[in-house]
Length: 392
Ligand SMILES: NC(=O)c1ccc[n+]([C@@H]2O[C@H](COP(=O)([O-])OP(=O)(O)OC[C@H]3O[C@@H](n4cnc5c(N)ncnc54)[C@H](O)[C@@H]3O)[C@@H](O)[C@H]2O)c1
Image (cartoon, rainbow, N blue to C red; front, side, top):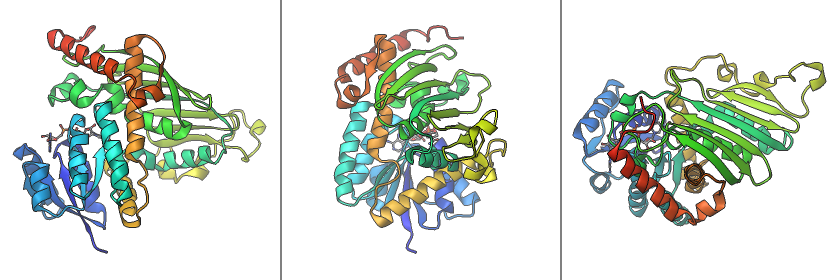
């Protein structure tokens, strides 16, 4: 098999997970690293050497890497506010691109790259967004049953991302916790994976109502806690809770309920599944749990996460991306999917600011772009003048 040459743009924290996954994929060769910070490049290159692999060439910019190395696939692992610009550069150079979540920090930029991706897709170029949890066996087992109608009519969902990030996390890089480069706080950076799963399972979001707060961190422009409700096109209702202020940090939980079944995913593992056509529920106090029949034991709650769980998740996404490149099919998560994820998170911020429900299709279409720019601009101005309210 001819291996595809991969370049990583941004040699920071998540780049190491990507490098680990690329090194484990038989169809990929890690050819280049591009980061204006030479230390970040050097640290990642020496880690790659420690894994027994040839260290890739190092460049100070994506442009230099594209000019010097024939990259078939570029992985964008930079601060979120740079994703669309860099991905556009990759598509213009004729390569495929895998963009870390979220698609971009700004909705207009996300819209722009989604349009460019649609054009490039017509020419056979793949533009995929990293949302590795869609490939978790638990997510796949639940989604396939939801989409086949095995849970009946989907009526509701409850999703919670109760994480903790210390102040040093936000202080560790200037872009974290800013509107311009993070695009939001706990909901955009940490919660967007769960938003993506909710949309995958429940369909098209119609309206959002939300509250947000910045309660446990200083020097951030964005929220560290959000509570939102989402109404979907076919009537299903979801509750979303996302926070980086839940010490010491607990597992992500996603419950989906339908007229004939329910599913619970806890920390990426399948905790509970009941679908139509299974054993008679009346024989069981809590309904028969079919989760053990749906996924391997290692993917059931209580199995424990392997040390390299992050790499495994990303590796699954690389299998999807490479297959999309080789067969010409759409990737599992398209730029259009990523744009919808960003639009829902922005609708949450708009609703919290306006104190009223916000229609997602209008946010997606750009009707709220001016309000959003004002919200993000004014919050940035306030936060540079004073610490976040309620901070300790
Ligand atoms: N999928 C996941 O589970 C997951 C987990 C963590 C982070 N992420 C995403 O990955 C992205 C990066 O996060 P991180 O924690 O690795 O950040 P980081 O700050 O650790 O690393 C970002 C790197 O990008 C470099 N950089 C900045 N501008 C650049 C440019 N124009 N060209 C090339 N390099 C540039 C910086 O110098 C830095 O080394 C974010 O969008 C984040 O949301 C995803």
